[in-house]
Figure 1 (tube, rainbow, N blue to C red):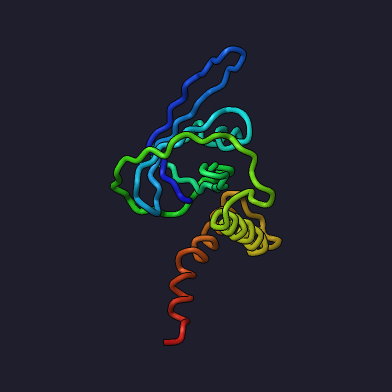
Figure 2 (figure 1 turned 180 degrees about the horizontal axis):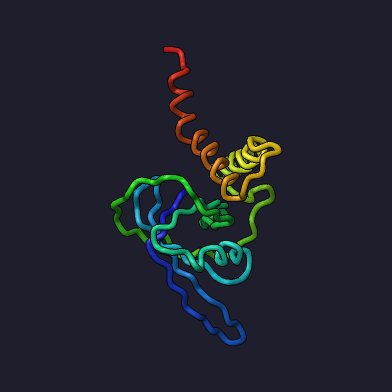
Length: 166
């Protein structure tokens, strides 16, 4: 799932011996164009996602890996998205809080996020090969890798559509 952050807020919770932080993320689900609210906590299985989103800024875009656990949809992975996402207008919908639960075996991220990560890794390797023995800065290599990734996800789709028999 791709999200665009609207805002985040943190609240320190002290319950007896427990002391943790609750992070509330208000975001737009880019696919459905709806505003949702997700609550994350600074411990347990959700700590990784909490740590990656606690400093998120308004308008930053992330790809979120989701694992279903009964009636809960737990965010199990998150990665910053560097592509282009259209502006959105949305309506408010409360998604409720997420009870931390361990990720299912083999479900590190959902298929869409996994595919994006694979393409990005492959694009990075291809960018390194592109420069060969030439000296190149990290920024130059990352720029070429991003161009390769964008081609696969954007221009590549047009190429494939044009290539289909009618």
